[in-house]
Length: 290
Image: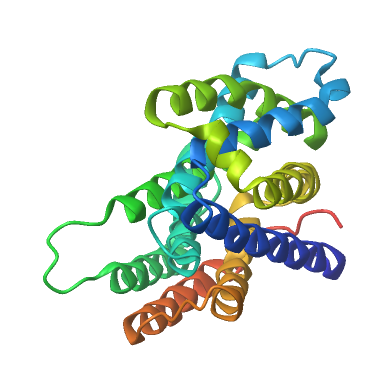
């Protein structure tokens, strides 16, 4: 990956970290229902990107599937998890998507994993296990499960995105926004209450996050991320998101007063070592075009 693209990836991760901390505040502290927030975000994003919906993509079925996985599936589950776990923990749990992306890349599109990368995947999963371990608790918390499912949805969507042809990142984002509105709105209607009242009560926080998440996160950062996924192997791009949890932990400690315990930092260090091993390129094979 070029230095310029690496810097772009760092900027993407910083935007995601800011969004994670803001989302945790708005959902857990201001009381905005997460599915309602997600639906509102994609409504605004789809409205802004409306001109990019045409022409109709040739692979419309695949586009809709990827849009559901990377839109409604990923963000609906993730924001629901933000209401139940710290932003720092959520950011670490999302990193399970990195080894999962490598595995799915090998299974679905034939990218080579290899023994070294497989070892890295195992180390990363051990680290995540330490972060999740709670003495005396037999089951995983609901919030952690939602975040893990969110990571799986994003990983599968990222790999399937590689198989799409002749669709620009902005057009993909436009269709992601459009296809995500109905399932998120319906889920909010069925599972949440007092959506409008909650938004009105915390209007400034709701509006600020809505604009930031719809325009800066969805339109800017995710469009740039899609572009990198089209340019490089998914198993190369995904590990670089390890910058995201580190930034989120720092911002969470600085702004929300989050104080993770020792197991969090030990598990995080082990997971990041595993992710770094996953990042090591194979000895044979070419480099993506600069």
